[in-house]
Structure formats: structure tokens, C-alpha cells
Length: 476
Image (cartoon, rainbow, N blue to C red; front, side, top):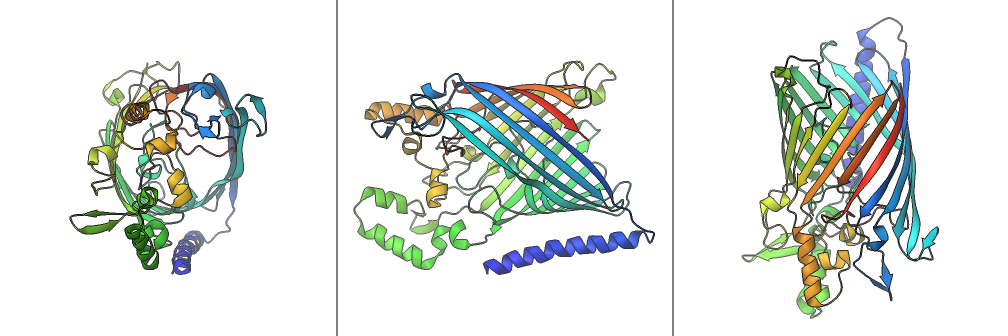
């Protein structure tokens, strides 16, 4: 069954490719000349952490709750990208992009690891290089204003163009648990985009999950936006997340009958509280009915963008000045009595505003996010055990001490990590250079002493934040 699903999607994508290629050849009987163009860029980032949560602080073999090793520490990174565009004709283009990044961050950890900077301090080296965008784009209909465009492959997808740190939630959130990840990932799949009406844009995307466990499950997503008087844009979207799992027992662990019966028997017979608690991460019983936890579900999104410059007849403002934008998404429509009790606890909301700089800067944006998620943001239980439920706050943050202290810290992380912010500024210098800065408390997971992202978000509390300066170069 698993092979059949991969084969079906592969054949569908190949059929689209060859159909587009065949039609593109029929469009013009003259000799075709493939035109190639190159672009790329590089960014250097350097900044400092004011304070951040760090789990790898050891004393006598125990993990302690402390932030002293991630106070006033430096963050540096460098990234580079190259892009190739092949235009076969007016309708068909192929894009390929490759790039990579290297980061050097001082991080807490055992001193025996590489790059010791003092007691418990290590230089975490994280890096990668690979293909990040490779896809085919084919336009149907009127070539001047195509009513339908097809994308197939691994393509970038940002439906809220103004969002800098928060927003664009559809492909950077997880079900279940309902977590938000940093960055705007590309999408692997097939996308059909319609602009049949000038003000109405619609996207239908059949995608495969490449960022979050369980990998390669297929989702079906619809996103639309409508613009009024070139000033006010409203958008809505919905997703049947993991509607077609590659392996059902990964997406819904207790869908495997033999595994389910074995675990439920163990749960009924054991008196060990830890064993029972771990097994109960797969199911819950309510009013005599048993429901199995799953990573699959539904997402519902709404957003807006308001640009009052359409009503202001003046050229003193920059292109991005005065724009107000926002977004909210419901992560899972189903409640339970244990982890997912209230819908409002699964709705992150963001709002942003581009302050006017009168063309002094390209953009000066301030964004805020509020998310009343009452659980840990750790992905440890997902990565290690495949549990589709939140990790325990006490375990994921390593909270120790008297019962009163642990309860106080637990309440602090539950109630005071709801609010996040980010301030962005950017200025272009000529055609190729740019400088920028960022001041934020967001969803960043810094590299640990092995160079891998932390399980838990590093900037969880009001006193946690950082700043970052960027120098960029681009060409095309």
C-alpha cells in the first residue's frame, strides 16, 4: 500500500510534466530555444542573545532549569543560495535552487564536546547544503494573464507576503500537538493556482510532508484571497492535514490492531504509573468511547491585509509603508478532555504593521503573536516515541526543586509564554546590497551541542529575546 501511494503520486506528477511539455511543443512549431538565467545571494547574520532557555545545563548528572549559559551569548551564521531558471517557452519554466547555511553559536552543554569555551559552554556548529527549490511551472490559457498555473515539485509558498516572522501558519504548524515552527518551508507537491478573476486568487495544493514526523503523509489544502479596491485583501484557507498517510500506524499509532491490543493489555495489567502514563499518550476514553490520538486533522485559516495608500494620493510613502496585516489559524477542530480541551488554546493569532519611514527604509515592521497553548512546545516525544500528544512541561524543561518551586515554574511556562514579538528593519543599498536588523522573541530553536535544533523553543518567557544584524548580497 505504501509503495502504491508513492507510485500514484509519482505518476500523477510525471503525467503533468509530460502533458505540459507536449502542449508547450504544440504551441509553437518553430525551433525552440531554451533561455537560462541565474540569480542568487548570500547573507551574514550576527547578533546576541539577551537571555534564553537552555536545557543542557548539568549538575551531578541532572538537567537543571537555568538560563545563565545563554545570557549575552553571540549568534553568527552565513548562508548562500544559487538559482537557475530555464524558460522553454512563454508557458513553461523550470526552476532549480541550491544553497546552504553554517551557524556558529555558543551553547550550554557538557564540556567534553568539541569547541569548549569554558565551563559548560560549547561552540555549536550547525550546517547543511542541498537543493531547496526544484519545480516546474506551467501556465494555461491567456499567456498575458493566465487563468490557471501549475506548479509541480519542491516549490516556495508564501500566501501572506507581508509576514516576516509570524503568520503563513498553514505549512509551518503541526497537528498534533499543535506547534509552530520557525521559518517558511518550501512545499513538496502539486499546486494549481487560479486567477480567473483579477481580484480572486485561489490555490489547491496536494502536498507531501517533508519537515515534520511522520514524514511523507499527503495533505490537501485550499487557500483563497480576494482584494477590494486594491486596498483591502481578505484570505481564507483550510487543510485536510495528513488525509492520506503513508503508514497508518505512524500517523495514528493505535490503528495497528496487534500493537493496540498489546499496549492496552499492558496498560490494564501494570501498576507502574509511568508505564500507564506513556501508554495513555496513544488513546483516551470519554463517556465509555475510546478515541485514538493521531497526527491527522483539519486546519482552518483566515487573514487580512490593509493598505491605505490606495486612498492617499501622495508619493511620500514607501512601497510597504502603512500596511496592516493579520492572520489566525485553528489547529484541529476536535476537542478532548485531556490535552485539547479548548478551541481557543489551539488558535495562534498574529498582527503586524509596517511603520512609515518615507522611503528611508524598505520596511520597518512590528509583529505580535498571541497563542494560548497551555502545554510544552517540545518535540522530544514526537521524535523519540512518535506520541501525537504534548510533552510534559516538567520533563521537557527539566524543572527540579521543591514541589512548590516546580509548580510555580510550571505555571510560569504555561501562562507567560503566550506572547511573542518581532521588529524588522531593512534597507537596500543599490541593486545588490542590503542591511537589516531584527529584535525578537519568536519560535527559534537554536542548535544544541550536536548542531541539531533544540527540542524546546529557546525564547519562551518575557525576559527571553535576542537581536540580529544582517548584511546581504544578491544578483540576478
